Image (cartoon, rainbow, N blue to C red):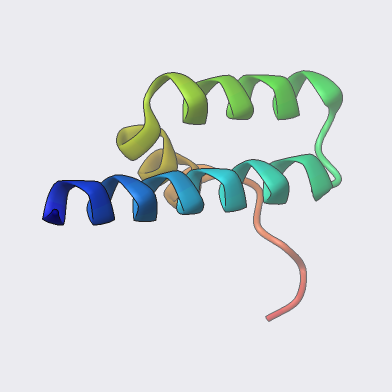
Length: 59
């Protein structure tokens, strides 16, 4: 049961991250690269994107 909930949480966070990438002002190539990283490496890709991805100007 716990594995299913954890998998669902990771999936939702990955979808959210990909939507944030798509909505960012980055170049198309950067959007594709970040999306692929998040899709191929769901947990690690999400963490890498959160740490190194494009930051919004709103604080």
